[in-house]
Length: 94
Image 1 (spheres, rainbow, N blue to C red):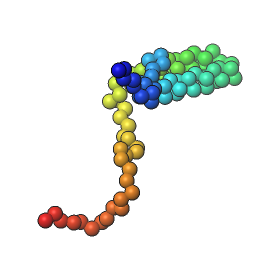
Image 2: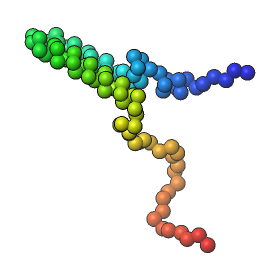
Image 3: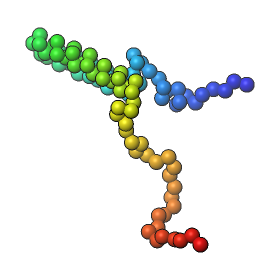
Image 4: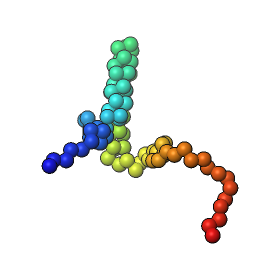
């Protein structure tokens, strides 16, 4: 019998252009903002600097993807959640 992976696990490993989905969304937001900046600027130097910025951002994001230990985030949510009250009283084991 075939065993299939859970869909959410497949989404966690999805990669577009070498970047995970969240970093790819950040890159596309930067590209769209850069395009708006280019449209409303009339300087050739600004246009060149925007292209260099986007290229640099892409390189940095791909390096962070290859070496995740460079930027380590702490998990925000606990692995288990319980409703048990915590007591400040210290009990001794007999």
